[in-house]
Image 1: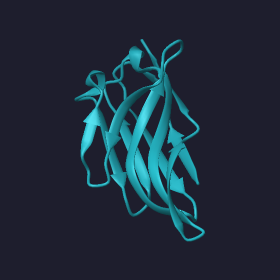
Image 2: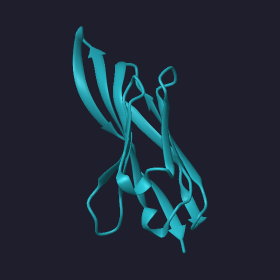
Image 3: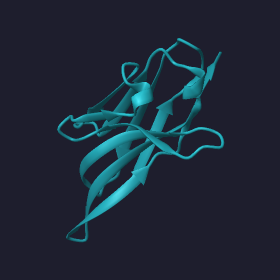
Length: 123
C-alpha cells in the first residue's frame, strides 16, 4: 500500500498551488477518511483538511476560505487546492488515508501516509 503525493513547490504570497495524492495497492478494499497534514519547521504536524468517503469536509480555521479539499473515490485520489497562500502556509504537506485492507481472507484497518511534499510561500 502506498500513498504517492505530488505538487507543491515555491510560490509568492497570494499565489496558488495544488497537491494531489494517489493511493495504490492490491490489498486496498476501501478508503475511509483522506486528508492533508502539514508540518512547519519547529512545529508539530497538524491536520489541514479532511474529507470522508461521502464528502464531509473539515478544515483547520487558518485555511478556511482559501484551501479546498476534494477526492475521487474511483481513482483513490485526494486533492488540495491552495489559494491566497501566505508565508505561514510554508510547510511539508503530507497526505493521509484511513484504509481497509483485504488480505488472506481478512479485513484490516490501516493508516497510511504519503512521503511529504514541500510548499514554500515567499513574502
